[in-house]
Length: 83
Image (cartoon, rainbow, N blue to C red; front, side, top):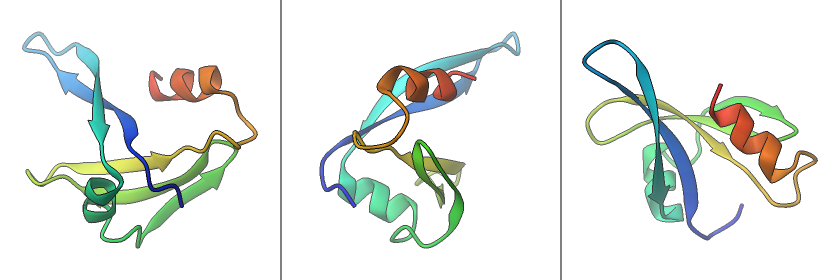
């Protein structure tokens, strides 16, 4: 498991109902806390493992721990986040 910072995409709902993606940066410790020590795996695939978690405000999240050694490239990973 990498021990560096991670970047995540946060989906924000606007007043008109449209969705907006925002980039957020988290430390490894923050991600470890959000996912309860990476305790619940939602999926595994070419872009790494996806973990279930909760933000401090109670928002449910899926955390994708992407690795540079994954079989998918950075462009594919970012495209997946935006869909």
